[in-house]
Image (cartoon, rainbow, N blue to C red; front, side, top):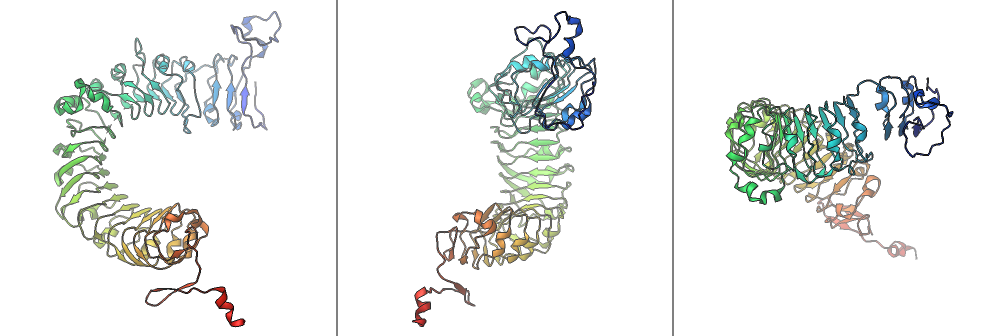
Length: 576
């Protein structure tokens, strides 16, 4: 049967199901078949059969397709079915398809546009190995999904992220999907402990229950029987209320007991424990294969363990925003040659490295805000020629930034050096690919450097809280990609250049608390901003401020503002 149409309609719904399947029950569908039709006719003359051609993919708007109870004579399920991006309903039950369906991905990237009342339809896909339904609304299924998916003995990957699953996770009498390797239940609304039966599937390689509402309980004991585990993501997983139980009181657990089993996870490559209430620093034990370690946004105290230097596979280390203290020395990084991302910000570390230290790594991202270098400027930064993201704000030191800083990396895109008291004397290098610059609260003075206006790719520029004088450069209009501009709380004293209104992508503007005079060039993109963007400039007038510009102004050579109030009467007095 050829279903090809050279001029396909803009079909929104296509229903090709057989209206008279056997054993229908009480469905009242008028039977057009002859009274002598038998069941051996395979549902009579109304069934479809033959070939489904790829030309059907021309139905770009197809949302509903029902091919159930037909006779497709054992042909495989067409591989082009996944090209219908708007498809919301697909029914292939009892359609006569053959072959082995091993991969099914119905991820809803728009989140919860698609929904399912049950997963019964999946129970017949006994050869399925990969099932991804992330983003699909499964809120009405509750805990029934476990029993339904337990009928898929070959399932190796299960992705149910952000499916609005709630309640508890039921325990099957016997676990059939013993080949399960990847489980993602993150961003759901469970309210139960981590299921013990799942922790006993020794084939598991990856577990993500971040923001899921699952209470892992005593970590890492619950995962001690998973020798193949390589990826473990438990972001915002530990329920503080759970630790009030004296049996599992986190504060009274001895670290060497509570983390004793960590050494059993010797194959672990990724460990993510962000946004929990962890207090003692983790004894990392024998996790020598760790590639990624996220421990940020906890309550960790103490110092970084000396054993960190032996984690030679480490690519990313993030311990930001904790209560860690102590000295960080060259020894901590002696074997970390593969390190690309280092985030130590939001702690109280003291760097104790020599001025001629050359790290064994080449970082791409470095965040050391609020850390304390032992010298005026971390000279070792000049060795990081691959750096892309560099944040060293809130450093309690002062000094001169050497000229070599601007030539250390041609890849630098994001620079945050706010509140450092460093002196940026020159801008000798135009870093054309920079997208973000934050030099706020640095006591910078003089004119705003014209070199900054040459950063054509700049999206964020923050120079607030300095002592800049003079004018906003007319060449600011060259920053065509600018999304955010903050020049507030400085000493700028010339009219706002009209060219600033041409920054069509600008979404945030703050020129408040300066000495800007004259009329606001209220046109173009400037009309999208409210009074707070301009307040604190006594001589500034015009929309959106509630200050009328009643007279022309001029600036004397000394820079003093002279207002000349001229009324219509005085203009016409000479002609009466």
